[in-house]
Amino acid sequence: MAKKQSRKPGQFGYLPPQHKFFLNPYHDARFTRCPKCDRPTKLRKKPLLILFKPPQPVSLNKTCRYCPNCDLLIVHKDDLDGLLQTICLQHYPDLVGNDYLVVGTMDRKNWKEGLQISSLDGLLNMVHDFKQHLEFEPARYTWVKDD
Image 1 (cartoon, helix red, strand yellow):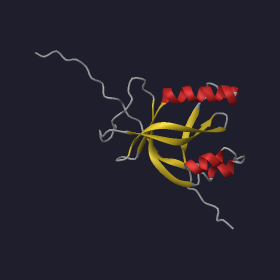
Image 2 (cartoon, rainbow, N blue to C red):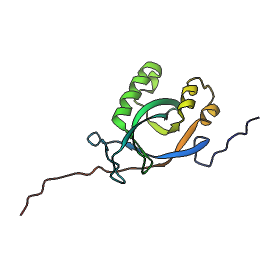
Image 3 (spheres, rainbow, N blue to C red):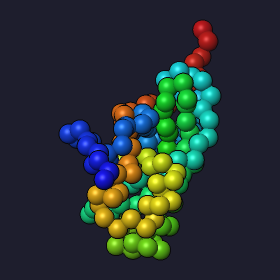
Image 4 (spheres, one colour):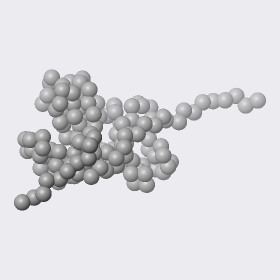
């Protein structure tokens, strides 16, 4: 008999937290370099779990920016909004335009199996919360007259 996993207070999923997370709201900043360490970011495809309001979980395999040095996952909000709108129009028309929260990631194997999961408890067994949600401001460069 499998032992039921436990979670800490304030944690959504039962799996250990992974990655720091930044949902980039800026249309003009793509963060090709890490905002923490200034090293180049890499592209990684990660299964994300998104929770809509009213509660409706949606999983999406999304290409994200990732800094392995800082363990920072960056998702561009405008890209995500477009994908979610397309998914919602096809499957959940009543959720179009609703607020959402990117809750965490899933292992790829679990994500593929998760397409058939029907219970919330089964879903919670597959989710890695984020270690931390971060916010950054992009560097703004201006011209300064040389005296």
